[in-house]
Length: 264
Image (cartoon, rainbow, N blue to C red; front, side, top):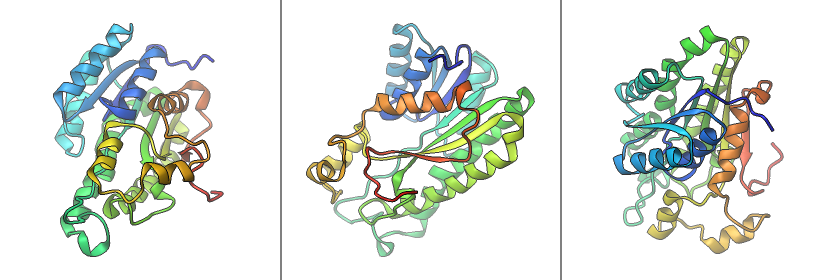
């Protein structure tokens, strides 16, 4: 299927490892010129090199998307190397509860600053980056914005970090508003609600002992009988960013192997 991504400029904030890296690699394979970011320098260098070795175009930037200046640095890098971004993917990794203090799980274990941090990580990172790219997308009459969220937005539960689980819902509302405000300019905005995916973050979470949900639990709960593969996330994001997905906007799309049992 021709996705029409050749020569498109794609920014993947949080695109140096796990599902973010898989998204960056898939967009590059489809011909997009990729700008990927992380707060850690080594994964940025590794992913940038891997994409180039595979024949793709990529440049990495070390920056913190949760600050206005960091978000501006990411988009400035894209402009300086390739031009104004056509595609923005925001992949904000969530915090892991502390197994000793139980911090981030349950209302009484969450301080005010925990909720403020979660808001900055998930909501403000999306706000900062969207503000940077939307004017040029609007002028061009085309754009794609995708936020990588979680199925916990639809079914909040105590096993996951409470501030992150609850704050992510605000991102859905934000993206819905963007889809309404900018749809007439050929810009789509969608959220992906992810289920259990194999990644460095998920492996660390399981190894920490903080998670009540074990591999055995997921094996029973997942109809497909396995965790998601990062390349499957990459394929979905590539389609949503494509010319063929122009009529899909304002949606929260689950990719969870059937884990969520609700209809909607």
